Amino acid sequence: MARAGGITNAVNVGIAVQADWENREFISHISLNVRRLFEFLVQFEATTKSKLAQLNEKLDTLERRLEVLEVQVSTASANPSLFT
Image (cartoon, rainbow, N blue to C red; front, side, top):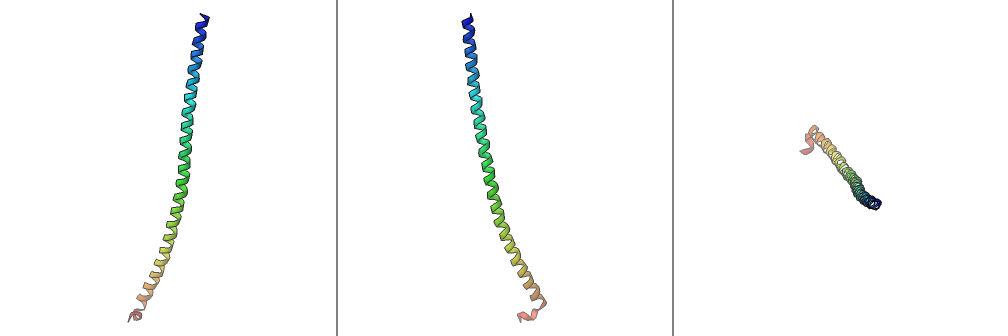
């Protein structure tokens, strides 16, 4: 009977080792996917900041042009003789 108990222990150890490897593999997959997600988010943030900076520059340019046009219109409105 001692031998049968030894086989049972060996089987239990084998099952525990197999379960441990499966858990490690699962954790490895989760870690890899979390890393990939983090890298994606970092890249997304950098790209988004870059695009927002470009849009901000374009808006600044448009605002300056609008200010120039407003001055021209107000000048023209104040001096209608410029158009005659």
